[in-house]
Length: 441
Image (cartoon, rainbow, N blue to C red; front, side, top):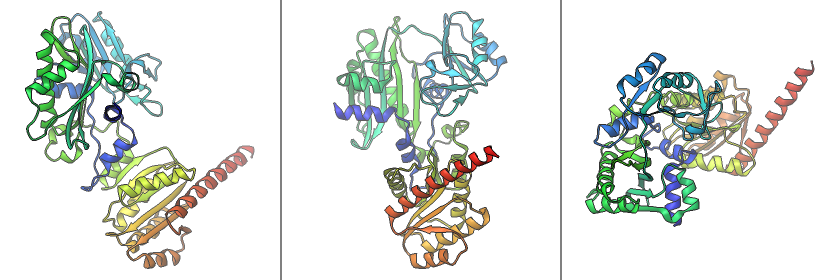
């Protein structure tokens, strides 16, 4: 069951590799769109998929009237952020838990008020957490049984694959480790679409039976149709559950999209308010650069996603940490080099800049001119390591040598990484000594 375990981990992981893949598009700079839970549920509701009744509150006044639109026995209140583990999260105001249950409608505004305007920190957030700007108030339903269901694009099968488990409502990666045999998968021919027998078989393998079986199969078909309709890269339902009264409901939803389809999914992409997107990434998108901020000290300027990832790997091999992924692309101009330097120097984590460019389509001399001009305009104080190879490289080296800029020109890929790591460590040590000296004075 190694393959299903790997696939399930890929489907739920939102780490660097997933973000890099969405960024590294030959079509240019793209962002990875993730919708909030309430947005995903609204999309599903509009496409005939069974979800709980819900309303959304973005201020206290809306919270006070939220229950007016929900005639239910019990309420579930959920902070809306793009991170898992909300239930065990802690707010910056000390309030515990980003998910609450209550049967007292008078408690709903109080709970919402404690969530709105505060940062929620969970095991999946970074720093001091994420600011909560919206809260979903939904119908709380009894769950007779929980399963897990997802559809994602998988290159191995060159198309969609359904993944499921009888165990839902829990961390699916943990399930993959503790009970791998419970995870099932079923590829779908993207040309013919999902068949009735496939949907029914998947529902049975997820443990649905009796009055729930056909309803679960119908919901699986509707989820697949939505997956195709909106150009999704992943639809994940956890839990995919059944209620004691015979309903099959998608209790929690996560939908991710193929960013290359943004031009034909304009309404969906317009739903992204970018409030949880790194401002540097937003600015990079505007500048037509592929950028992802990391936590290291070496700022990387590279042309090509593969070279960028290889550069980060070799930096780590030599004991350093990359501060970013920045791919300027194959047709980089002098202006884009300047824009890239502006982004890098705006990051307080960056202590050294490493330029690693292979001149195939790009002219190394163009990059060198951009580097020199950027250093002059920005008045660069950080150590700068440059490795250029390929087209017009001799002219590029001459441009850098004749400039008044202190540039450490590397002789090869490995040498560049070593220099970058050495200079970053030296810069950090020098800064620490200066700080101690200033404190003493």
